[in-house]
Image (cartoon, rainbow over all chains, first blue to last red; front, side):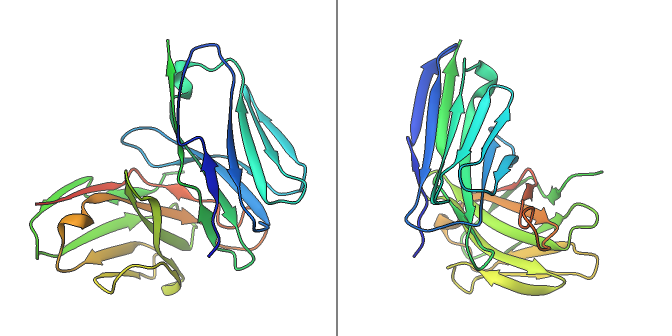
Length: 110
Length: 116
């Protein structure tokens, strides 16, 4: 069974701090997606990374795909209260199925 | 372009009843996936439909079923409801075609099902 382990499960920090969320697996993925979900809403796609070692930036969010395409990280610089939400990663396996991480619940306190 | 819509948004049922949830995907999307989300189990994949055929299926009992119509709209049915079926049911549409954007999911707001 393929697993995508996401850490930490929960993170509560002050506005202005930096943070990193990790997704790790022993399996290789052809691509990896990051989503953010706010209360009462469905997840919203933030980014897809495809190439090993790829780095994508979305304003204060930096996404990296591991060289071996088994892991990924999301780094947020100078976190804002609007960054609060559940962050989910999902890797696409060789059968074109998405393997989902359990999510990281992020709270940014003003 | 209109997003994914789900109806109803909230539903309360009692044990033993059945329920049907509806999902309208983004125009042009042929793939619809259904997920169950609970605080304890996270996002669990139920099944995916593509061009009216079930293409993938998760590990849920046969009480959970679905179908897709020719206009790509999809319904999910849960029979003989149990207390543990209380969850947020999310529908997601995707183009479902090849390439790096394959399976990028566009989610609806979900249906909150409460089983009493």
